Length: 511
Image (cartoon, rainbow, N blue to C red; front, side):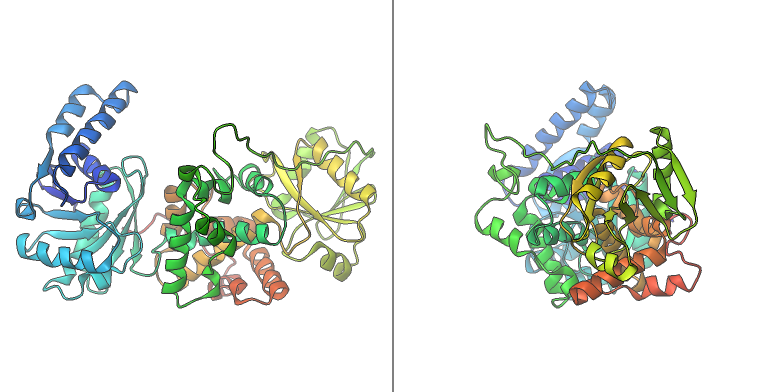
């Protein structure tokens, strides 16, 4: 597998933020870069913008002055497509319109040499459709950078039906030499990230619609228990509600209305109202001058207790026991099914059932369920829900125990599953579906979600850590509770349960 040599010229079409970012990446990697835009003067202005970006890197000590000058000297505005004749790789980053892109590729085929690779930075369009009708569709592939391209590590390398394996290998090697983490994916709706990440937004939106908790409370749980950089509401406000909603609608339509990708009516209402997030001043949160950010709900309790009892293995939540002991709480251990008892309260890690349903089905009085955490030894917050017959005194005892262990406690309405658990289970389920349908390897999917959207753990590695049996149980309980195909478990997860209980293929992503 060989990358493009440094002497190979790279052309970028489209001088917007993404095209300029890609041009900067290629120039810093040592290539002569020709930047073209149909708008007169746009390419030259973009290069001026790149110059300012490089200056900031020098000021921060992240780039030497001579490297800045050399990179800038490699950037050249192109006046026409004829000026791209010598390129070995052309990357288009123009408007997301299939017809316009196909017209561009047809024109490039007339100008560029036969060995030139034609790549699209599309985030959603079919590479197969883009290449259809060309004389040499085998040299067309997707090269999807994430914004801002100079900073984001992930690049999705996308194969269409006709794409030559050698073209893909060259793009993978080139992206790696450019300092990126490339992953290989087939041309299917949403590729990897825009498909597998849908449940991250969808589950929070669903919980909000069902009155589980406020935006601030749900976001805080995903951050402080789940380890995500941002919660779904603050992240969609940052992305733009219109952009995020449009991607969801696109994936939903491309999968012929599969309920797994059903758009949210709450988000549509925001878009209809022009509340697009940070860029418009209002979204789920208010960003206008003088507005204050709402705080998550937190429970406190001074209920007294002498000790707590741990019955059996708490599974992924076992580090809670060490945390309780570190807080000088007396812990009695005895056999059981994985429960914590304090006073009259019974605490258990959610399994996707309603707390009231589990209390009745398992014969547990005063049941309080707690949410999944990325690391129970370090989490700052946990969400809890309680069964309808759990007394206020028992709930206070449960809260007091968790507070003594140094955890903030956020209440969630009794709904199937808790925010982090059902979000992670659904992410793992969608990732498993993508592996099952040979969209990408398990390792590449996990890498894509970590490098592309900064997840604290790949969803399949997370499923392995939790236990495939528990993830399946959560999905089955969600499916049973809602009666919706949205929560149907992937066949891959069911198969993994009988084939060793792991879904992530160990080892490095394939080349």
